[in-house]
Image 1 (cartoon, protein in one colour):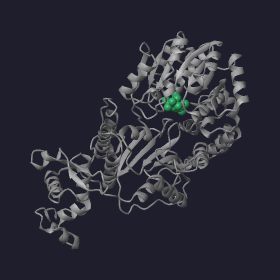
Image 2: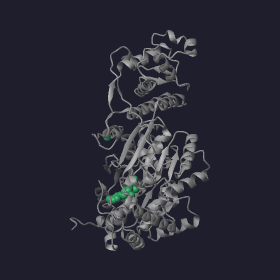
Image 3: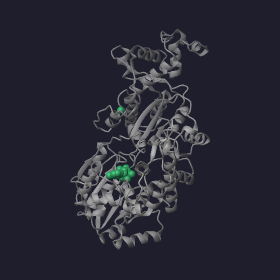
Image 4: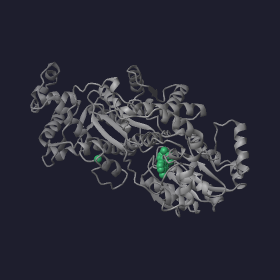
Length: 614
Ligand code: ADP
Ligand code: ZN
């Protein structure tokens, strides 16, 4: 028996098909349903939508949801309609006659939720409409758009103060997945939420496994990673458009459903690729950072970075697009010496003001420290947002296989003095040749064979030295030039090492798995990362195929019909009838009625049997 029953919980069961609230959802729902204001900080995938959707259903009138992203609005509305909720959106993508129809329904009291773009909300006409209806609440989604510090600044968000001025009695709930305290303060200030209750969740994404690996043969490494994610949707980030195009083409040739996405593509191609990513199962998007903002596809199973992201925030946001549905997801970052040099140069070369450059430099250093870390990745990642998370998490590469460190003080001194003695005018390659005492024409011409540092590092191979240089750069003990030649010079921090005071501990680079051959295609199981066993494969595929078919009929993405988590729960529960199916998490009343028979038919037709014949 359920210990407690409440109207909110009843709606959670009947409309959304979920058994219980998560984290702070219940407290937030109650606060808003009772007419209070709230500020909600919750990571992506935390379940923010329900925090205003359920109060919207509990209170009389229409909830107005301010959302900056058109694509997202439509998804949310589709999902609500599937769940049997009267919802609509108003934005510029809608033809005028449809807009009038939505307004008519709004005035007639026929809508429980209406999503609007901020610029629409602020029009005198729309504000006038609002004065003629019952407003249940205002939800301000992506509330960080009010902040000038963030990357998503929307000037219209600043004008939302009109809401508390003109509709003082109506509860407001602002939501964001941006954790940083400065942004939070700005939201409170700008949206007049000084009196609002604040609900701050941990920003940990426990279902994401983080891995940072040295780049040695990126294509092979990527392919091995993708082998563990056959048939799954994911994003591969690369820095340049050219690399995006090349990687996508190469993957497609290797038989992977990969599509490119970057700002240089024709707008139509870009939109079509995005649409396929959203509407089909298992498309891999190869993209620059231009892709992902406002994509709330729940079943992205992995995010791979072929190049360094720009900052920890960027990394968190980008990897955060994986696993919104709470199922296992994986983040992989490949990184090497040349990335460090490139990033360092990009900052130096940018035409930003010095102050801005300093900030960028700091951000990069944070990211490099993360990449080179020997501690739990989650500790560092959350620490970057001021959260005091205590590892080990047991679910990142460093926790699973703790890296070894070694005392590199002497090699570091040799490296720094070789940079210094050769005049701080050369790149890592040449300085390493000096250290290793590699003779040659150029060496002789430059007179570098006569340097006292020539050959003092012959005891270590090139790979070893590259590792040292990379880590010295990452630690800010060396920096790359602004001019773009990749030349290295000392920093103010180098002195402490050179004069002998400071110890340098470096990470022992993991050896690349050399001859790890690719698995045969026949061994690649779709859904492997969700724990689908080979014997379950036929039913898993059948459930997904049915979902795709139904989604196409409705003109919605597959996840709007059912999430992977729900299909997975069906697969495990093997419901025999509608009652049992209704108990599956994610199956609400409306969906049960609409899809129940089709899914039961598939489940009953394909009974998976674990075959333990051998
Ligand atoms: P956010 O907006 O915070 O990124 P969403 O509101 O999209 O997150 O929710 C993320 C996922 O979690 C969705 O698939 C949603 O259906 C699911 N979800 C949210 N709350 C619950 C709950 N209480 N029980 C089960 N699943 C939930
Ligand atoms: Zn960890």
